[in-house]
Length: 295
Figure 1 (spheres, rainbow, N blue to C red):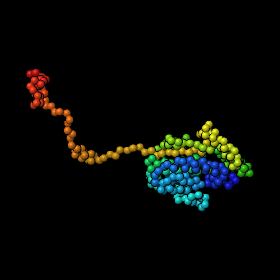
Figure 2: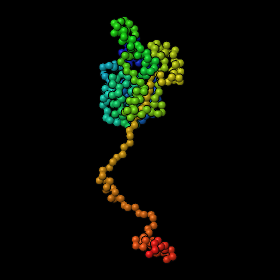
Figure 3: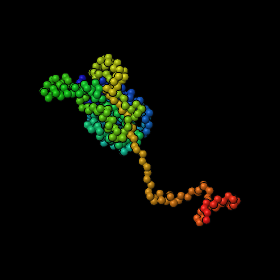
Figure 4: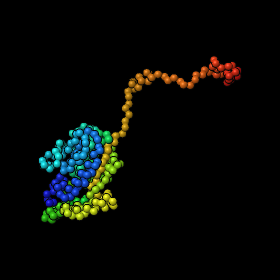
């Protein structure tokens, strides 16, 4: 079965792939249900419909490359074939972008994330899921990849075939901490309301029965070692700093000239510049006049 695993799409048909898809489908359905807007886009992983529970009127599913995907491989039609690092959308035109393991399979994940930040509208959201290199899955993938490469270089091809990784070989794991740094540089803020979580604590096994026997690790891992989950799930929001529109100088001068001078609310009192005394009002008597200076 390991020889049939060519890419992530075919790996999703294995028992471990079904285990991953069930957990991520639940996370995406919960996250995108209350995100409103007009345009949503999913990049990668045709085996998972991350926009199924979203109610935006325009939803696209994109795939990188036409010939690498069979016609009946996706449960929903693919509407766009494009490079994830060069999206055919104008700046600030999308309200939601989902990246299910897109950064794991692309040769330049930082360019993909930078392109997603460009097409996102202010306060738009991006949802990212990927493999955690600090988990048991990541540790086993690195161990078997190193052993397979070592046996091939030594000429032991018969041993290399028996030590093929359970996950596809072309995956590039990105740690959640490194992803947070990238998001911060692109003004993408992780959602404070549960925008960062982990899942899948069972060992990476090929047998469905053995995966079922280790199901108790999901409850224990979520309580005792949550950051060691095999998959991370991040929701980020694009923040744009507020700006002030500056008017032309001639428009400010014209508006200031048309403005009337405000009337004073303080009673007017006349002072004599010569005597320095305050003049009394006509309705007061002579005794109420106070002399401030004597001549």
